[in-house]
Image 1: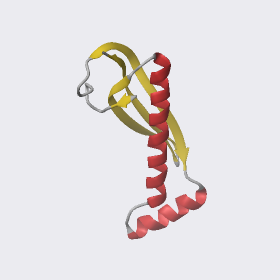
Image 2: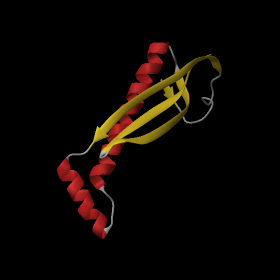
Image 3: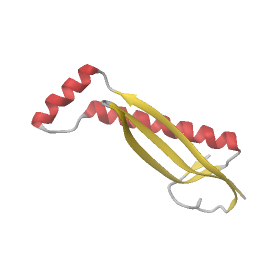
Length: 104
């Protein structure tokens, strides 16, 4: 499966647009991590625990988007985008979406 942020797949022609493929996940850190992040905010620097969490969440959202596209019969997903939103204090949703297509 080709996944790209561009509107086309280099070297291939889009045969058919199948619709929007999407995948999402909601992730949160534990209380201990939130306390550690609060302390880190006092001195500055990267919140590595949150960076790892968001990387894991993006990967999971992409995998779910790809599975959704496969169910639609797609060969590729083009114009892929990510969105994030706070669902609850300490919990964020990552949404990956794009256009599922078949290629010639």
